[in-house]
Image 1 (cartoon, rainbow, N blue to C red):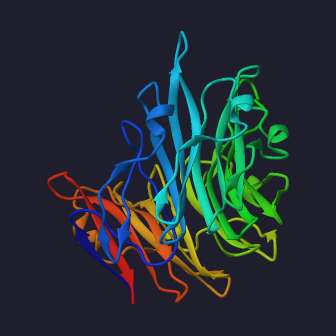
Image 2 (cartoon, rainbow, N blue to C red):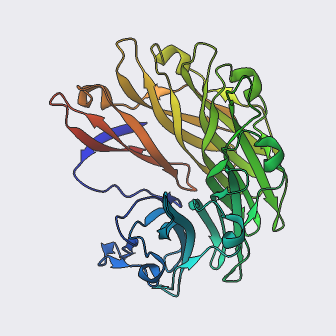
Length: 379
């Protein structure tokens, strides 16, 4: 059972997971040691990279308390028309943040000057995978990229195999990466398929890394039948072990309302996406429902969180649980109905420990239309 509580600042989640954030200048980070947060400091080397003064961090993942990987973007300068945005990665080893670096290989890829790392996952110290996007000047297309770190050294970024053929509409990116083991990861995001009458349709994709080699990107099985409105994406992937993952996101149905979906991988094979059970009963109004986050404590035992729109047009927060590979019904996060007088709630992130118990955080709008944050825990 989950119980919600309003919190004044930051919520800490049990279990392994990734955090996100942004910074106006080069990224700041803080480390919790023995339960006490240290002092934030600019990432070493980021000021040297960030000549344009616009840096952002997209993700951090820690294989242990003292070994992490993070990534985001910085502005190397300005062209005659726009900032030149590059992707960076940075590692923390032996409890020390090392120098930020441009993602190797992106200089050759990112000729259009717009790249970013959206997600990093580190299953072991010095062994991480990262995903995001870059822009190709010759086509003007945004392409999905991956980069893998092995033994503390980042290899060259590359376009995801097979994604170029899918991405005829030129708007691909990875939004989430998760690794069940070093070199065995899954990632998800979106691409734009071939235009029809000048209009691209956006599709959701997944891709697997096995033994350090990335396979071909593929449309999420089952989404073609769901995605009648022509816009689908994977927002979150979680892999508790190699080849066993769950992912979630949203699609537009034929009525152009968003619907929340989940999809699971077992033994390296992705099953068919499904609308989260019970979400149709909750979701009674446009714009609809979205899965924002998925986390798995063990293969086939996961939780998902997000938002839906009730019959009064208010946005409410939901959670849903998977047990032994089967997804149960979505439910409004207990307690948020009373908090959410302003009608703008969402459970934006969930994290599940190996014990199977999960924590989630999100936000709501009170009757004074102030946005507040909440935490909710299973027991």
